[in-house]
Structure formats: C-alpha cells, structure tokens
Image (cartoon, rainbow, N blue to C red; front, side, top):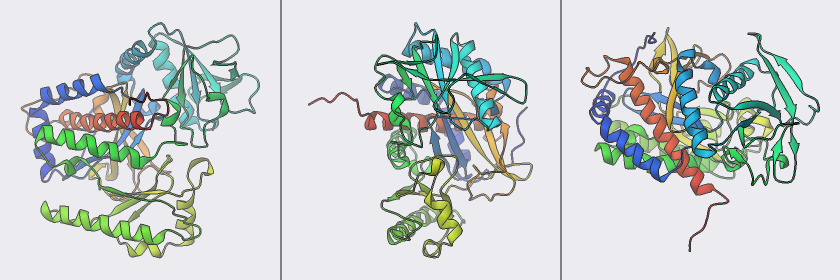
Length: 431
C-alpha cells in the first residue's frame, strides 16, 4: 500500500527525479566506488525534507531508534543487511550484546529494541540486553504491550572486555547515543567490536562536522549529475559560545541568521521560488528534536522570550547548549491526510532497508516535526517489490520518489562515514 501523497511537484524536483532515474547505473556505480574507499556507519536514519524545488537531509542519526515503525515487509531486507554488516566486521560472531538507552519506561523505544533484537537474532546471533543503568543489579524483565518480554541485565566489565553473566560477546551494539557522556565501562574495549564507535556519540559528535562532510559529498554527487549541489544540500553556519539563559553570543547568532537568510533569498531568486526563506537554529549536538527553533527574521533572535530561551538552553539528558548550527530551512510539502509529513530513511550497513513518514498535524511546513504528537506511517519502499521504474513519467510512480529518498539518505550516510573518519581519535597518522 503506497501512502497517498500530495506533493508540490513544481520546478526542479521533477527534473531531478528524471535525471536520477536516467542515471541509476552511474549513481549505483558511484556509490559502489565510494564504499570501496569508506566504511558505512553500522546503522543510520536520515530525516529528509522535500520542498518540491529542493530535496535535502536535515538530520542524520547514527543510533537510530524507531525500527518499530518499519513494517514487517521490510524485515527480510533488514536481516539481509544485518548479515552483510556482521559478516564484514566479525564473520565468526556468535554473541551480540545490545546496549539500549537508559530510559526503560518508554514503551515505543523498547518496542524498537525488541525489533532490533529480532533482526539480529534472525541474522544468526545470540542477542542479549545489557544496561548502563547502575541501579539495575539483577536481571529485570519488562513486558511490552504486545506481550514480548525484554530482559535487561547488568554489565560485567573485565580488563579489556564487556559482557553479562555467562555471556561473552564478540560484538557490542550501542543503541544509546551517549548524550550524557561516555561511561567508563565502555572505554578501552580493545578486544571487542563496539558499534558505532564511541566518537559517533553526542558526547563527541557535532552536527556542523556532519554537514561540512555532507557539503563535500553533495558537491561530488552534483558534479556526477551535472547539477547545482544546492538542490540537495542545506546551507549552514555555526555560532560558538552561545548562552541562551545569559543572552550572550546573540550578536553572532543574529549576524549569521541574517547572512544565511540573504544567501537563501538569492538562491530563491535565481530559481524563481516565491517563498519566504527561513532558517532553523539547533543545538550542534543532541537529538530527540530538542533545542530547535525556526527563525524567519534575524530580529527574532534578539527578542527571545523566557520559554524559548529555556527550550534552547538544554538538550537531552540536561546537557547545556553552547554551540549552535544555523541551517537553511527546507520546507516539507509532503502531506498525509492534510497533516505535514517528512520521510525518514533507515539503513543498515550501506543498504536502504525501509523508512516511514513522520507526520505531525499541529506543525507547519517550516517546523520541526520530531516533537510530541507526531505519528509514523510506513513508506512504501519498505516493500522489496518496489524498485524504481525508469521511463515512467516523473511523479507518476511513487517508488521513483522513494528511490530519490534512498539516494539522499545514502549521501547523508556517506557523509557520516567521512565525518567518522575525520574525527576518529584512533586513526592511524601517516607522516
């Protein structure tokens, strides 16, 4: 069942879609060559915005939750991709230790954990759950709404290895984004594979580094396609030393917002786009849609009310915000049942395994949809039968649209690969 979409199919998107479908062999070969040089992150989800005139990623998550929002039809794809990923890293792997987030009461999140366990069990691994919550000293059972039981077990650390009682894993999979910092128990594990690596967590990672890498990838890809990289790349700027509570660093923020809005205006004029540009100011680290605001005029930055200052000053796990990313706002003109929607693409290893629409009835086309009240509708490309259909009129075939989302998702994943290589503290240095 393909979700019913109402998309503003004006201007270059049709052109872009056509160009991508005509270039499938060249695109796939390009990706193949890139993956010969770079290692994909273990798993990734990417939020994509389709403005009709522009299609771009706005967020890339290296510890994706939300696997529970993918349909049963995508399970074979996910299992196959998980097999490929494990085979590459540790072909003799038998045991996988999965370490989830600490919030053990969120049933939606825990259903995602159960789905991950299902994927890796079917990929041929014994999977058990270890918790970073030191208050849990005995195995603890949690029953999910559909009756599945998850058992959280306390971690046992020896000199160079991490495991559970009577369970010694070859591979440790983190589904915890380390917003609160890197726990001691995860440091110095040189005998086991820790996926993703510690420097992928929000204790170290920065969105500005990711979008710098994405800009590089977008330029390479745009050259291959003979097009303007702006059509797939959101422009951005950065402000360090911002304190929303104290009101310091606001001059930098105002200047950068004004400059970026000017750049977007010029692009809109170049393409004849009759829209009012906006930017999104977001914490340079962190997730869960926290620390984000939409700005349409630089003056708004000066007049922030107390509530907005409070919202912007901390992200997940109470971490203070001191550095912000100012990103070109990409409106989303996807709609489902009259509610604003954005596609989220899910990947394991270098393969797109599915996705869903994040839908929010109370939000506008220029707002962050990752907020309380959002719902999720599976994307049709979760079904393996939906391959792109070259030669079909642009916009006529939903799978063609999903092929484009998959390309943008993979470009963002490739950028994450560049980013992790550049920020790897253990990278070999050649002189």
